[in-house]
Image (cartoon, rainbow, N blue to C red; front, side, top):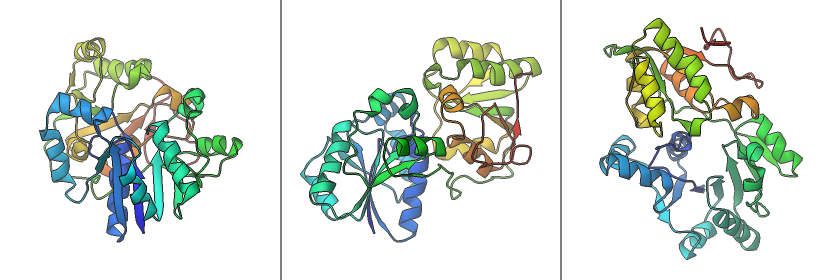
Length: 312
């Protein structure tokens, strides 16, 4: 098949967790003999911030880690995209695209497309910001790929065909790496997330590390100075951005990690853990989770990971 994928970014994972899953899916499709073309906006927000903070070497690291992956940049719907759609068999359009592009691709599908067209939703806006999602015209789409049952049912309630497609870790990249020297007790890898889990980070990460005097490190971006100060006062080293493909090496050098989900996922989208726990489990590091309701039975608490009801 010829597969077209329209996503915010393949090359940048700066505050862009969907890039983790996208890279694994593209790798898997290519390994099965499919032809894949990924389109991402020129000067996209994630890539722009990555280049401003880290410089061109960050993109060079991506190219070295994924020599078979690349993307086509665009400035919106144009003749090149239309011609690519004409030859497509399957098209996936992620929800972090401009509504104008989403609508234009749907219109092409209605007018002349013989391909299957799906909208891929991996966010909580359908619940927390429905007015934003109302801007997306999905008239020409065959259905929605939603990354959790609760999201799938919500789309169905709005008259859309929908299927659940959970995120997962690419085990080609995320795997145990025994033998590396231990650098500390606990590591947390996650972005600030606009403060959506600020209280939870204090309860399940900062407070416990301070009380137990753990040697801990935090990786992630968009932390305000107040949060970095709180980490430092707890004896936690803040290390900034970490390329996602380097996560296995970091996990291998610590004794334990934690999963602290964003509040909207816990409150509004139960059963959707995001990709971080999958990556930790694939790497074989002991995992402790802050409360979240695994209503779909993806994991076995007590066997796959330990669950903390509250802070110590």
